[in-house]
Image 1 (cartoon, helix red, strand yellow):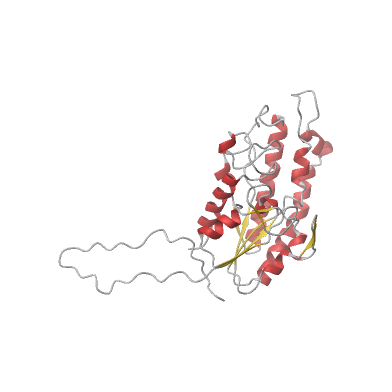
Image 2 (cartoon, rainbow, N blue to C red):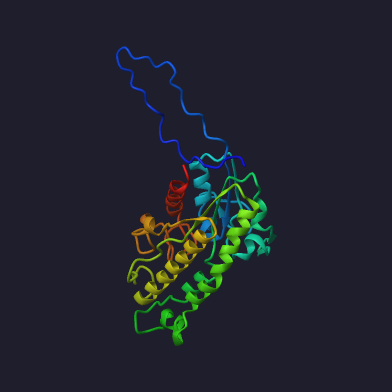
Length: 291
């Protein structure tokens, strides 16, 4: 084990105020933190599709400004590997190769080793088809001229996204266990999904009816809660980015958005973080590391 505790940020040097007649002999500075090996896993909420600059594995739509890249700089990682990939599902982490437009890519877990100190992962949204379901909530005419996706997805007392979340949750725990087996000395942070839309939505800015906007955010919240529960059960730490994105959702002014809606106003994929959001999320993740 290279180290049991990860040092995140050196906030400032210890100041010694020399008073008259006092000697500074024997005062030493803390040693520098040991090297940090950081590996980022996950889906498009981690990879940052369409946020410039483009980098990484062809077909994965990674951004050099995604939260893993920003975090690696914040914590001064000596070694940093980002294998997050747009479209990734939980099975693509440890059991099934992901197929991209550029061909198959290795299992993300292959980037880990006993030398890995820190792992971050954002996963789950594709397991419940969150983005594709959200696209079905677009209505370019106000009520009642259209169809409510909330009504359609909860018809007959069945909650399509909620049931998918319940079904996928145990698989997330299995992924966390597989990561721990491959990188037994690493701190594992499970980074959740943000607050995409405020209560009641913002019809006119985003073409989603109020009740549908509320249903979608409830679904994201339920997924976050399930990820948090699995993290606790399987020895990982859940990093909740919902609070930091409140007021910076898809309803905010373009330059204030951390998350885009179905109609983006920034260089980012619809229903995904912006560069500003990635930077904010990286700060939250850095703050959650064990000092």
